[in-house]
Image (cartoon, rainbow, N blue to C red; front, side, top):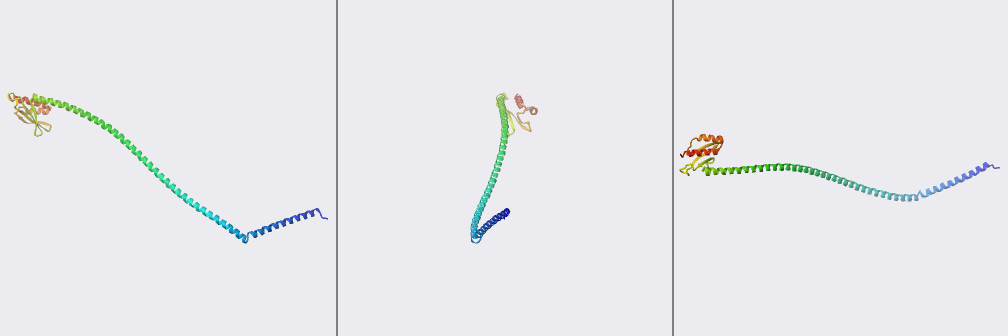
Length: 240
């Protein structure tokens, strides 16, 4: 009589055998597929197909590489151009800064010159005003002197009947008339010159007394009018 354990073992053995058989069948199918598809003509066709795809992939990769190389060259050129542009801009910026600095320096110099010119103008205006005042004062003094000379000329010519004559360069002659009551046209004269700031009488007609003393007094006082009046008086004495 068969036991329960023997029946269980028999069933398990049958299942195991069936699983082994199924596995062997699948392995055999896989082996047949591999041998039929991946060996011989199938394998060559597969390799050729993959080789074409690989070549196409490689060509695409090479084209892409060349394209990238071109882009890299373009980028380098662009970078170089950018660097050159930046360098030019920096150079232009430096030139502009230099021009601005020169303009600032020139402006400062012009402002300084303007200040100097204004100061000079003020100083020259002041000097011109002072010179103008001096000239006006000299003109007034000259007019007064001319008036005095005119009065003196009137006095000497009309009252004293005196005429001045410049002779021989540095000699001055005093000619008197209306001295002799008997002959009003008779001339009495003396000639003087200045030598080393000293008066000298070089000629006197007619001769009169006291000429050395008169000349000494003239050199001391420098009062020529007094000298002339005294000389006329002495000429008058010669007619009596």
